[in-house]
Length: 78
Image (cartoon, rainbow, N blue to C red):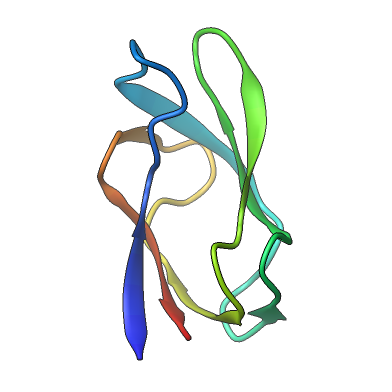
């Protein structure tokens, strides 16, 4: 199944974040809990982990892109 992953909210006041870097490239597989990408907000830099086992199909929000909470950052296959 193809799923669109969205930028999660990590704090009550978080409205957007900058994608700093990707740990996986399209075509690469990953396991639940492995790092997918890193984001930076006004308060913190954190790694976003894979919510399930799968394969990265497409990166929608490339590095150095500012993304609103709830916006699609990538598409995966589960």
